[in-house]
Length: 191
Image 1 (cartoon, rainbow, N blue to C red):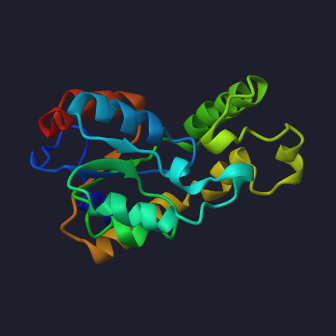
Image 2: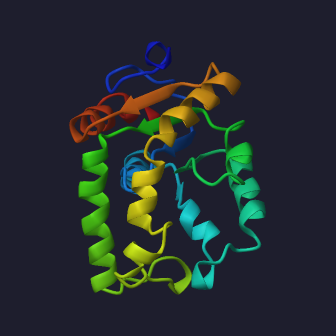
């Protein structure tokens, strides 16, 4: 059922779309795509992780208010994550881009990214850094384990979105080649 209503990497988009949601599991490339799309279109990108994570990985009390303010804007690109954010973003979104690479690709992206961030002690949101390596074994919500565990949830999330917003264009991109084709093709009309 879901395959019949999705757009592919060469299907045209409504050129007036200015509020774009990017959905996918952790490590699927949401932030990379959103930043690239913002650079090509001039539509501002807001990183939801940056709004959510306060110091010590604690949720910022202003998170939901910040998401409401973002959603009220006339033009934005952001991830379609966080249960508290989705009800504010979905009614205003004009296109949903679903990154759906195979699980092996997600792991091939998230493991090196996590290692690079940890070894380099790269500051993420509000001064947070990736936790020590041993937490992969001790924390069931370690980002790599989280990506593996939540990978199948994206398809279910798309089905729920389409149940609520059947008119919403949903673009499914399953490979780097499809992402490149979409960026150089239909996404160019968004600028």
